[in-house]
Image 1 (tube, one colour):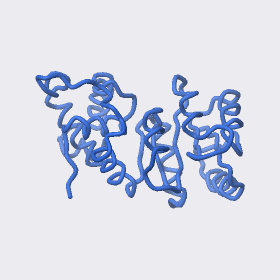
Image 2 (image 1 turned 90 degrees about the vertical axis):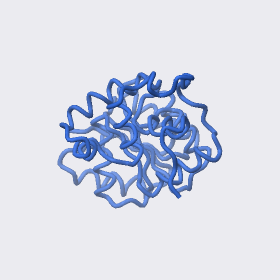
Image 3 (image 1 turned 90 degrees about the horizontal axis):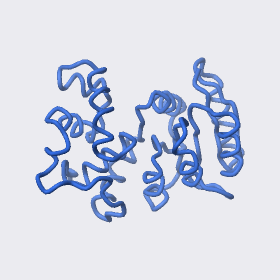
Length: 220
């Protein structure tokens, strides 16, 4: 059972999310907060698997909550109604496991929680290209690891580099495995070794690292 704490300053959103998730057999909403301060209290008291947070809330915003729990075992899925802005970059730096738009279909939100709980991370497809384009254009984030002069080959093996490039295309572990003709468990093992090498803690941060260090480039 995936235990979830929800937090959003809009009552309708809170109730709607709680209702739709309670219909899922493998998800249990154990706490619901109306602001960031209450969300942090609930997370610390209830130790859920995932905290599903609005990115903008009074008291403490979702980013501040994510930073406060980043050294715990709680994964954070951030919900937003906004286009890419400094809030999203701040959330990325805080190590959140995923982003979704609030108006995503219920089944997408439920599946995203499953992905995040399993440590795989997720990002709404409609946000991906905008996020990466902003990274490329604005360079708001510093590279999360310093790329040596000899290049990425000094950090990653050839297989890890293949996986990173496919990850940047938005492929899941299973899809990457199919492309490389290996088992999904093999991809997962490579990712587990690769993330520390890059100095990042999530798949999403690894993708940003790849764009910042010109391992991959945005297509027009």
